[in-house]
Structure formats: structure tokens, C-alpha cells
Length: 129
Image (tube, rainbow, N blue to C red; front, side):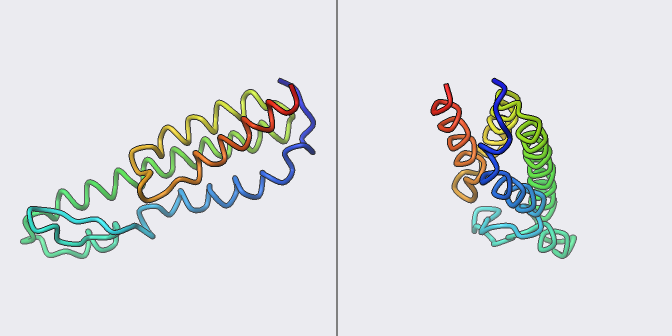
């Protein structure tokens, strides 16, 4: 659907903010426990700082590296959505935001920006139809 970029002008800054947050998922982290005692390792930096002798160090480092990859993938989709909205292609923006929300879904207990943005764009598209 081709629409005016002005219609989505208010949401673009919110998407830009979400892009920034997603790129820092692993850096900012969230409460996460590892091993049977749920030893807290709440960011990639914390995981990498663990002593090599820490039994679950590899698990924690791998988890947070995966979070970094997923956050960057979600951010990349968000940037595609911004470009699509600026060019008036709301269908492409909706698809990009859906992908970002899909990537975010396994971590929805910690972040839900993309789901909210996807739903907002979808509602605006229905209003215009």
C-alpha cells in the first residue's frame, strides 16, 4: 500500500529508538540466570568477564552473543521499515516490523517494543484502507 510518509511521521522516531535499543540488547542485558543455581549473568560484558573456570561461562557467553545477533537482526528490520515508511511503502514497512517482532518474540519477557510498533503500523494501515 502506497501512503504518504507524513501519516507515519510520528512513528518513525519510535522505530529509530527501538533500533538503538535492539542494537544494545546484549550490552544492556536483562536479568538472566545460568546453571542449576541460576547464577546471574545479565549481559555479554558480564559473561565475558567470568573466569574460565566458571562452569556455565560458555553457555552465558554464547547466549549473550546470540542476543547480540538477534538484536542486530531486529534493528536491521527496523531500519528497513523506516526506509519503507519514508518512501511511502507501508506494506514493506509492515513486513519489516513483523520480522522484527518475530525476532523479538522469544525475548518478550524482556522487551516488546517491536510488537507494539508492528501493531501500531498495522492499525494505521487499517485506518487508511
